[in-house]
Length: 438
Image 1: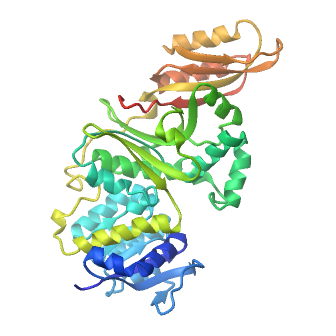
Image 2: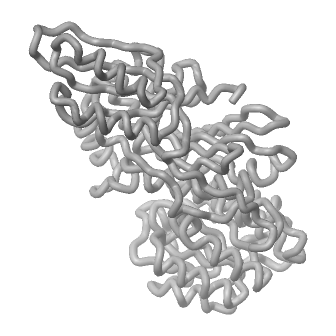
Image 3: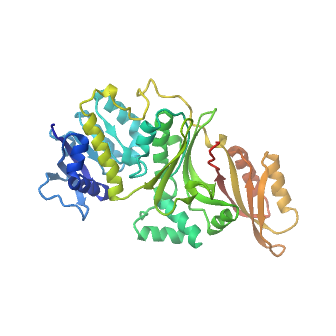
């Protein structure tokens, strides 16, 4: 059959891995696709050192690839928002299919991109945009298609998981482990996207849209980072039978959908609690199948290339299929008219349990006043740890509460922090059981 000709834009870590996998496994890939998949052109500013492009048509202009009439599929691996958006829309306007690993692009501009692709009858594939080599998008979109998805919760940023793992295993401070992650190349010089939850929110936005058939709504995702987590928080969580993980969580409720990324206490026995280092894992609860878990390498050259090439295989198989009969981009048919109108709930309306750590002057009546403030907001205490101290000294108080609304906890924390005997801000970490019954 006629070969599918690919143009790769970006030959960094993922682009280089994609190039190498396509060339190394060309025979097996062609047999699976039913036709050859060949590299027609590459565009790059720098080349991954393991990537040899001798004899390949190369350019430094990514738009040359988007306008090349011999390219059937543009593979966008340059990252970012603006240039990537223009590049992908140009390729679509030229009738080219697109494969991308760019979670920020899909989360922020996906609605526009999918609408343009639908009008042109081309495919946009993005398995590599979430959790690297883990095929969670295909699983949600196809394998779990019979299910009403109840919730999705995942460790979807390896940098944050690396930091929290080493804080727990070695009792080290956040800043110390972050510096190691940067030295190892797991964290960028500016780690904001990773440690403050923005990267995970991009990915969660995509997963939630596929799970529930709603538009991509990144701007409504709640994000909170891990930079305020201390070694003491990690230790006290362990004492209470929990592990702290930086989770992306989306749940279907009667009021709408939850869409949130934040540090979370989860019970030690949960599978997600035992995902260590830079690995990713996503748990999905379906009404028919029950709980399922997807685990593996969430980043890296060839793990991510595995997902990019899998998308190219799908494009090669579907390229001659009428676009009305292809698997929809976000799992549900329709671009505008058929998507669900389930609202994204504001964070203050979401209900969870809480871990609280506060520094209080050790004198009579302080703890009683804290308990009264919580009770006035309808918040009950499940567990309490208070270390001994000489009267008048500052002592940490650890509280674990029953489930309550975020807005009630916000008000309680505001009142507690206003107490004269409380020093500094109250540390708050949400608690989720992620139980099979939820």
